[in-house]
Length: 242
Image (cartoon, rainbow, N blue to C red; front, top):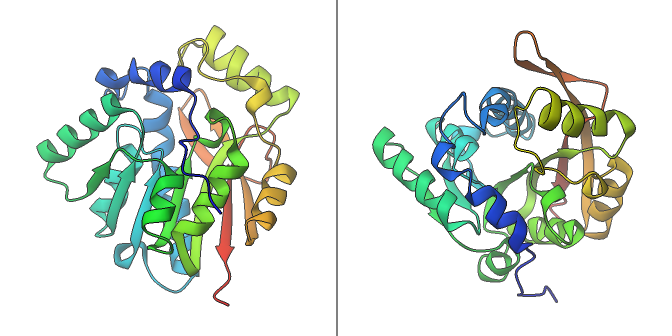
């Protein structure tokens, strides 16, 4: 039975809540998310197409949606999107931006675990980007994602690999040298190796179909898909229809 308690670290919520007001500033503290978002959307659209139905025709859940950068992009394709987060500050920003931009989607302050009890199998596609490394029990979150997606549906997550290179790039480089992220955004010991993620997925009844790395060019501020998974990576899980 899935636990109903929220799998959340209050310190993490507070940390990201302080970033809320500048969330939609492409040169602000959320700049890396703005730079990364086109690639995230491209990957999600690819997964949806490969599964036989375009993203525009999907019921989509974005878990840990923050201020809505990805959720709003998916809604613009025509998808029916629900974004959930436990930071009220970020949801307020997301809702206001969607209203200003006249983008139709829904936001709710609810945990993945609680929503899984309310709407099991309620979505064709579930995304969870840059969140697993910020929760106390990422395996429990993956179980909730598995419960939320319908049989035959798809799950896309992204996270950081626990390697010396990711420590140098994501923490030393991004937070202390380039200062594109606030100090303390990440904790190295919470980074997740692909093998760990795959094991949690199997335990949740999911099939891991793809792991793709993300490369970054600091000169052009451009992200691209890469076979190298030593820093950031995307993963695609499938829930069996049987």
